[in-house]
Amino acid sequence: MILKNAKLYGQEGRWNIGVKGEQIKTITPHTSQNETSDVNVIDLQGKIVLPPYVEPHIHLDYALTAGTPRWNQSGSVFEGIEIWSERKQIANETKDDIKKRALKAIKMQLKHGIQHVRTHVDVSDPKLRGLEALLEVKEEIKPWMDLQLVALPQEGLYTKSDGEELLIKALEMGADVVGGIPHYELTREDGVQSVLKALELAVKYDKLVDIHCDEIDDDQSRYIEVLAGESLKLGMGDRVTASHTTAMASYSNAYTYKLFQTLRKAKIHFVALPKANLHLQGRFDNYPTRRGLTRVKELLNEGINVCFGLDSIMDPWYPLGDGNLMDVVDTGLHACHMTDHDHIVTALNLITTNGAKALGIEEGYGIKEGNKANLIVIDSDSEYEAIRTQATVLYSIRNGKVMVETKPAETTIDVPGLLW
Ligand code: 17E
Ligand code: FE2
Image 1: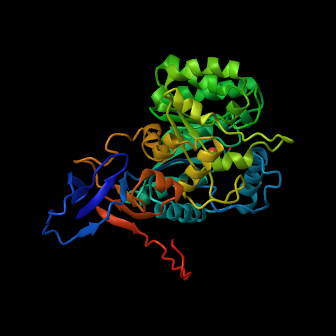
Image 2: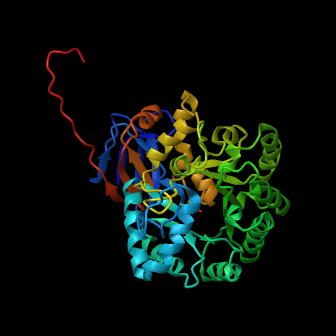
Image 3: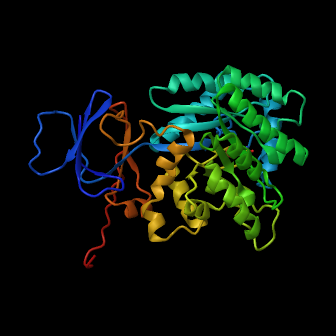
């Protein structure tokens, strides 16, 4: 297959991408003289080709459950956790029920050009049904999507006596990443201990770490300094991700200055979830209401890796969402005051290379000769216009085969007599 007349994201010129089998074989300059005997040629007409989108943070075991058994009235993180706990007992879903919901959500993600996903999975359920379901989904979906599973003790590691045992069991069953939720533990000390335990288990079981960290509008919630500081001491920062960190929006600048010194050295990754946290945070504020987003622009400015994720597709925490990361980028650029030209034209890094770094999948990721032919084509020939118009994903190609194709909508406007 030849993908001819492609613009490569972030690069000048037009290119022909030769795909052989599952691999990108050649990338050569496109000229009008290029002739080929290959029957399978797609003329991209200058549209942007980029590596597949990376969803670094979603909860597939929660997807499509919003409103059952009840809607989240306060819109807060904590009511979401309560509802999920109630639902687990009442709904009594089988593994197959959970798989079905997860796969429906995955279909939405595939449609939007996502091929790499890290999903958090609740391991507070003594039966570990969600994990069993997602372990099977991970295997079944492998030809089309790479899935990483985070063992998340959603109801806290130390709020019940079996928390630690369940987390360890989840890691032994095959979860890839150790999770945590320190701001939900009963005491500050338990929160600190849960972070230390996650790092200890990651070393012991050779796993990555991704903590729901400081997802609260409390300027005193400072588990990020524990996570970053201890990762630094252990020399494992690049294997560690801090998700949410919304309390950072409430820290004083003086404390943040000191914190950033540690973050720069620790080299941990950050996942910001602009749509979810604009919705969930600020719920205990009057006006002015805080946005409750981590300091994305400032972190990036310090050379710290930040990526964007969606978090939810219709669950007790967030009632909307259809998997679309371009929409997350749009919201995030607005919410983080990143609507200047430089941030716009590089915004897709937030859902491609930056996400790949956080997930530790950089090797083999990218449009390069010799890499797997995993790529997407979006409906725009400029980085700026791609963001302005929230360009549709026209093709998602996986292992050299077209997996998803979307025809752009066509509009006709019958308004004669104007100089458009
Ligand atoms: N769990 C949690 O603690 N926070 C969230 N935002 C979601 C699940 C979606
Ligand atoms: Fe989350």
